[in-house]
Image 1 (cartoon, rainbow, N blue to C red):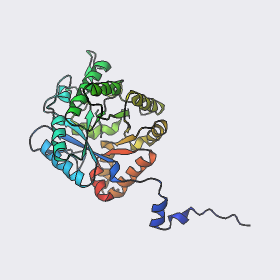
Image 2: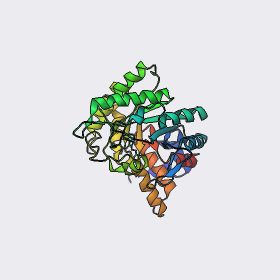
Image 3: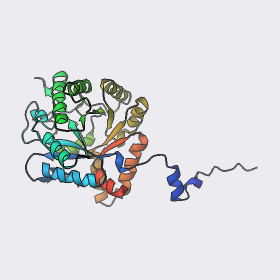
Image 4: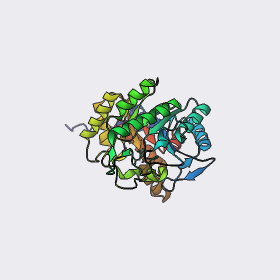
Length: 324
Ligand code: PBG
């Protein structure tokens, strides 16, 4: 008697069948669009290595936020490019700083759009590192944590719906939670960049945010790309300290890390599809080497399949149009 052949193709026959048994869904509801907000009036500065993404002055950021909201994108993540930088990055916790002003303006114009704010010092420090420097040029953990907590409070007071620390200092999630709670901001969630790797894929972002370290690199605070167990430790520790969401970053080269963190924790997991991932797709698509729409949607689906609940991606706006 012939062995009955297993026919997996039976359920692939039609679109209706495929839809019925699809294991992972991708919708605009999971996407967050990062925005670069720069100082100045009525400016829009293209970022060469990120075609389609501009640095926006506040009025343009408000306009862009409105377009995103209309397309169904539920949230934005703000990065600030201040007019002036200093040693400590004091622009980060300035109540009249570029992110604080942009947050207020966007929330006023589009109250239903979720505004998240990136908490880090590298866009504000003259040296481009994510914390305060010791005389020997290394980043001092604990005094940096204080400045980051101050930054988070200032952003939350300005109306940020969630603060997202991306600096990778130890203990910053707990310190930010305590500072927010002390300030009557107990309802502001923390989206922690928990497993943020020291990655070459951040290259275009550093052009966008003008935050390339003036010397050295970030390997003494961001994670070694070789480590997955350590990523799980980072995530678990952040949850213990009060993180409401834990993030893995970058996304596509780290799908195994997203999966490991997903399995180790019960909180929502975010993935950050970073600037270099975006730039690769854009560059290949511009040459006609990849079908951009298909590539983007497949990539985002794969990030969801790996276990991400929400995805920070520069493709959010375009994907929103495609996913309608
Ligand atoms: C700030 C920060 C970076 C990114 C997000 N927050 C840059 C870095 O750490 O160098 C990268 C985002 C991207 O590449 O899209 N610390």
